[in-house]
Image (tube, rainbow, N blue to C red; front, side, top):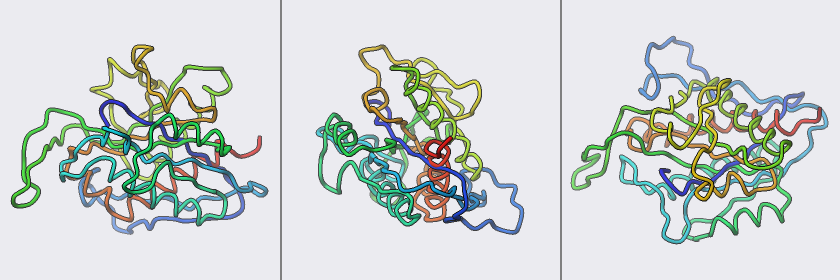
Length: 274
């Protein structure tokens, strides 16, 4: 996502019931993300006793009228990538038995952002999580397969988590907690945080957690899904879609499973009782 970004919210807590883990490879590797040999894995999520079941609103970014998002190095529209990822993540969260998930849209259906925020509020979601991919760097043209040409840039890989400090102290504090927790757990899996090189005029970097950025757009242009939901909300830019290495790795089930564990862990930390 470059402009017109969406927001994402997630929640998770620690405890006595373990769920879902990606497998760690036994052999050490010197490869670095997003190279194929770079390891990405996560320990199981442990839910505390009495954690219960929480409603999570998953926003598959873009998919609105006139807004399909970016076009990746594999010539895939962002709205199609986020729809696929949201469906996989929803299934993983539901299978834990601790989350009830509602998707912001279905394949082929266009939904306005304002309608998504309103639906999440009426449904009583505990968190709002918006999934996106980014595009960064100066693109060059290349052919991922014969007869197809699209943009590519390998200079700025990594994930980022965006949040808004607009609003009351309690809500903004919970947004920041979610953003930091999600970035931390993504980093623990082996995913790399984006350094924010192209964000400087639009976002402020966090002084405590790599990969976390606060919205610094002009007030009239600040991101709707970050500042409007009444529950904690964040946007996750999963990767640089112009980096063909990252684009391919985010199609792998192992990467999506590790991401799902990171999201679950962050939601536990946000939603568990004091």
